[in-house]
Amino acid sequence: MKKCDFSQEAFFQLLARLNADLALAGEEYEKLRARLIYFFELKGCRIPAELGDETINRIARKIEEGYEIEDLFKFSYGVARLVMLEYWSDPNREWEPLDERLSSQEGSRASDEHGLECKKKCLLTLSLEERDLIIKNCTLNKKGKVEVANALGLTMNALRLRVFRIRAKLQGCYKNCIKVREELTS
Image (cartoon, rainbow, N blue to C red; front, side, top):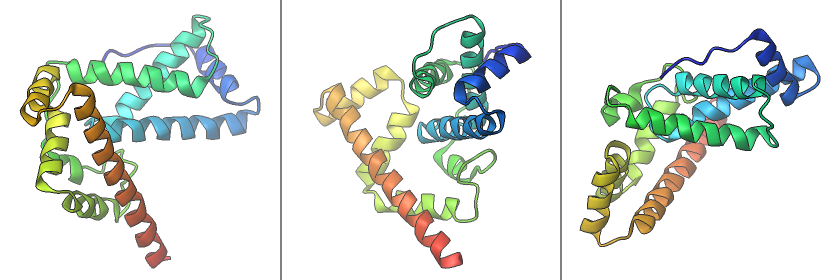
């Protein structure tokens, strides 16, 4: 990832866009950063915190350049999608096995003691076909995904929808698991 440099003024302009009150703007900034990190975690990116920061850097740079942003949160997800596409298309990117991704907790929203257990539990609720499809979706390029869709007798849109539903199932399971574990420990 290339690093976007921006001035201190651009950072303050970004904060002002988040909230006129500097203290509340700081809180909004942290919420935005956490949402972006979570977005990259869900997409299976190995360095979600770095990608979230890169996204914020680019947004601040756009603000500094005078780009008109109507809805900062919507805009941030658009920029995040572009950053993610760059990340996935980088030929020098290191690949990470799924087991390592699950055990990696540095910079992760799920770094609490229950996060890893819940991720493993939720993956085990999937059928072998669903797990295989999620893994292939995370690791294959577009051509590989087209081959998977053809092998399953699906269109690309149908494959995307199937993957989306599996991810939604995993996300729901994970949220419920974390909630139950937090209730048990409190």
